Length: 221
Image (cartoon, rainbow, N blue to C red; front, side, top):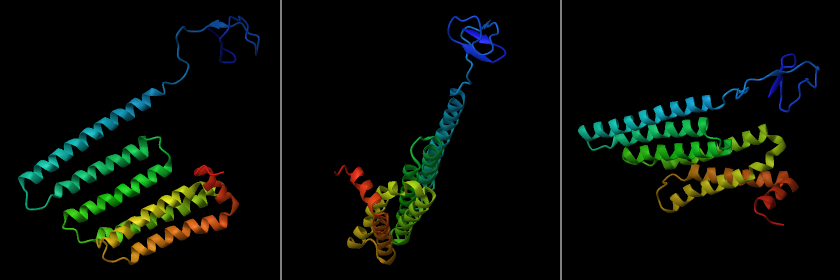
């Protein structure tokens, strides 16, 4: 492999003259990598991830052990352990993962809601997590969908499936109402109504583009 010092380009064939400036080429270094090592940042990030994973694992064991020693009727260590792993999940998902931002938003929101429900259950389950936090999280998800549609207005129809997922999530509080787990249904019913009207509004206002997107997603001709 030859290299032109004037143009700073490498010539892969056996030419002795630079095709650009017609200068005499010099022999390049054999096996020399002219590109930066893209694996170095990846290896460093993986190393940091392994350290954080070890610290989370160590913190989980320590919390469980301390809870075992000073047990007073509450498994408070589950809150600490779940919190540590939730933070680690956010780090892995939002920073390291190549998943799309929609997947990250859904996973972060739903896991956060589950974490809050776990806290409510450990402290005696007073129902505030399912009465208020769960429907509030669903409405927050709907608000995020609207914001993303505004930001990405040229491709707004791609969020229709996201909206359908929101409707499915909003059915969960209604099921909990039927099971008498949710005792204050007002916010849950509001969350379901917002999810449904958001989808219907997008479908009606979007008209043909919205219908074509649904047909494409569900493979309907």
